[in-house]
Image (cartoon, rainbow, N blue to C red; front, top):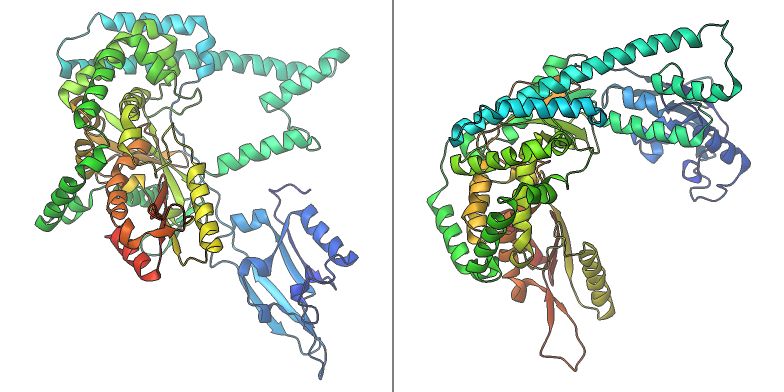
Length: 608
């Protein structure tokens, strides 16, 4: 198969069709296995080519390029213009690809031409500092980090505000130590690399046959040669790595005035992306300057008053008492428990934030720094903030048109110490989340299986079909779920679900004074305030979303008798008719109703 990076355009009269739908005399699949059609499809696969007309999504009538002389009505498409997928990805969609079809007076074929405009090359910026965790295997680095922190401990203050500042200064010292060691190792490797290049390129040196394979492997790892393309496993691995890297490269973006800005203009593209996310993460009330209306306040109070028992799941004292005891006697009491519960659970390859310090640095010197990290968390609880709480937003491509920022997922790279605080909040929420959240929500809760929601949908369809019962089902998805959470309302949800004072103070401190910068193609934007939504990357965000969505789910459940879908049951149990109205898998919501009118009311209810 041809390299996916190669740009190819192939056109001409192929005297056959790809499939039967392009032949007016045989619109059904029919002779799909004709040798000429099979050969054409194999050619497209080998050259990694895409049908131009399929990309343009032309109508059936405009796809025909040949017609038989009158009075015959036979039409077909045997003239094609193919292009490689690499060319399609590099072209400036959607306006750059044009097609011209004109009937030549001397031929019975239509002339097909195309114009392809390629984007400028994407400029890649310097990126940011990150810990090379493989260097933590060097005893001299771990010893240097420990000595650096012990020296810093000599100036440890007692006042909480000063302790937070002292912690930030200590992180800077650790970062400088990491940087110095990485620079020293890089210089040593560079010298060794040059020596290896000299030896391998010296024709007078004779290598032992047993060393040839090892030498070739070293060349590949050091970039002196490429992996053999005939190795299917290696080719697949490198293709996957390339795809992961491509998901973070933004070739172009559409500005508010409709102009497409390419990646060869890094400052402009960073400014557009920054403005987009600054609007997204700014509270709508802060943008409008209008406070919450009196009617909305009254409605919210009435709702929480009516649904308090349902939201709390069990007695409020138990939820508060359990979480307070769990935090005071375990996580916030002993550094060893903090490490086991909130640090060791972080994936080894988790990205670091602005400071570039991986959580594995804390694990490597935990005996020295563990107690100070715990004191920093306690100081943040007393002060109501954790000092510098900055994250880097890195957009990753999801699907559909790449020009639109709504099709990119904003992942927040959070500093490792704040990620640990997020795990503390997550552990406290998890303790009682099974009692607080209704069983019809199956997402992000360890004791529940996401398959339950799928089975419920399948069973509902099967019941309705078996008993000829009328019913309507609607699938809803919340756009930018984490990013659109209103923080004051989310806090009120925590209060009304019964979580205690320490959990509330953890939430307040974790989301106080939050700022963010955007990184696009290695270029970092200026910071902006982040007053709205939750961070995609914070360990507590999934559970916070469940708590944020639960009031809406309660409102819909309250309509189950009048709007829900009735499950027919055997005559032996007529007094227990089952009704289903909602099932949730995180932000994927499925509504059930017995009529279109009731379903429209539920959807309107959800939107309001």
